Image 1 (cartoon, rainbow, N blue to C red):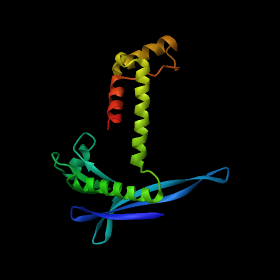
Image 2 (image 1 turned 30 degrees about the vertical axis):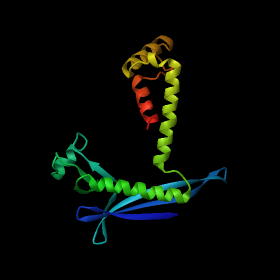
Image 3 (image 1 turned 180 degrees about the vertical axis):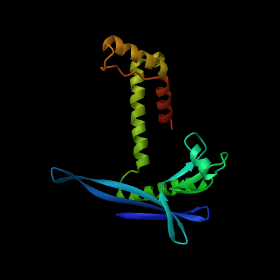
Image 4 (image 1 turned 135 degrees about the horizontal axis):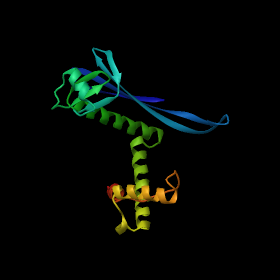
Length: 188
């Protein structure tokens, strides 16, 4: 097990960011079959060395989901804030700095453990999915792709006719929107 720490300014307080990585055995029928690496992170808001709050860092922007919080805490709806648990400070900068600190420490630990970061794995999975979508679109004929709304209506009609309205097989169709997103992912 290995942990890394960084401190980020959080208003008048300090956000102590800790990322921990450790290997854990995977068992099958009582035998160790492999090892998986687990990553955790923790953000603590401290003042004068005392931990006041622990949680995940979130950048807050006024919207329907944050409406109650903004009203309850008397926050300016024109501004962004960063929260960790119940602690809130002005601006999105602390939240972005905490996120960057976590990413940097995860990358450093992943190199030591000789594994990929969650972000790298997610990117690889997105590329594989995008390639699959492009292949399917080519099979269907890129010029024949329909919008997501058109495909939704087609699926409903197909299900009524071929499955008598019940649950059954409905062929996969790629929408124009899916194809566009896939091309964008593959071009990065």
